[in-house]
Image (cartoon, rainbow, N blue to C red; front, side, top):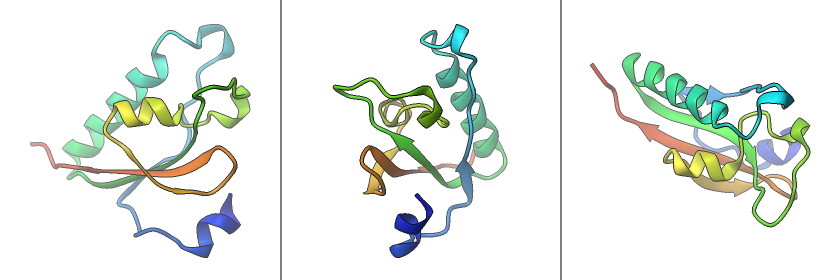
Length: 102
């Protein structure tokens, strides 16, 4: 979704979530949520800031696993992310400001 992203790029993030892979045999067990929570904790410990991800919505549809490289948009929303702008049929730029943690 690079072309759509670059048409109106959002503010430059301090962090990007780019890939959270869960083997198909282990999907649906909450592993992506655990991995994302751990990554966000590490980012907060390193000073926090703006975190960005591009994710797919799955409400009302079954998405192919190859499109869910950062977990679903719904999981990211549960972790405090907001949808910023749509960049594909089901893809969204999402972001969250993460406070620094000591």
